[in-house]
Image (cartoon, rainbow, N blue to C red; front, side):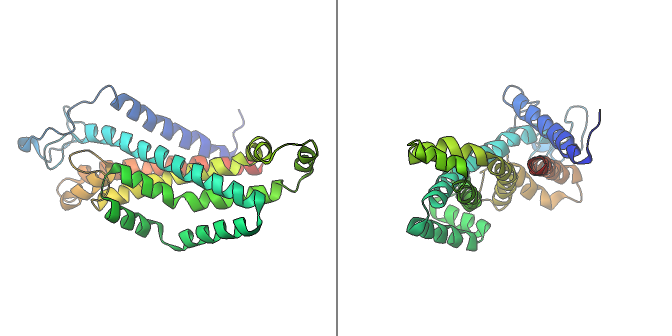
Length: 268
């Protein structure tokens, strides 16, 4: 079978992502140990037959906490991308299709959002509305709105001038039908690519906020929080730091590779 070099992004990225999804799926039904049970007698135990990835500074099983933390990572990615894409695509579609003063107002708001550093906005949002996974997801979702809005607007500006749209107008198609049944299906490819990249960015943002203590709260596991808790012990218990760091890196790498493949496939 002839596999192009660029298709390795699909094979490697897809394979890693499937592996991570399997870990998450298993975590709903089975965990080797409790993720919250503390046993100080076993704290910072190295990897062994009973604790495959060792234990943390409270004697909790790292593998179980990594598995449970995968639920948080993918939940944040799914919800935040859903928020950002639904609002962003709607605003981009309205802006690009109708143009005029409506386009000007929407795009100035989008420009203002893009000028404000995303992580700084997330910190401000959580400071105002409180810490927790729900506010973290909303904050990250709002950050991703400008990306989807600009991509959607660009597609609508291009497509609405094509002949098939003019033909639909002649046949009496409503604006709603033209937007959602004619133009939107034809610009889904770049939106899907953006969603893949936004998913990885959301996981990174959640890890960063949890690392700062503003995301998932103890004792619930989160890869970012585990990384934060392990930094004091990286010299005496490197497995504690490496485990969440590798999981974050693998997830982001897999999603970025899939995004690269989709972008390259779109250009073929």
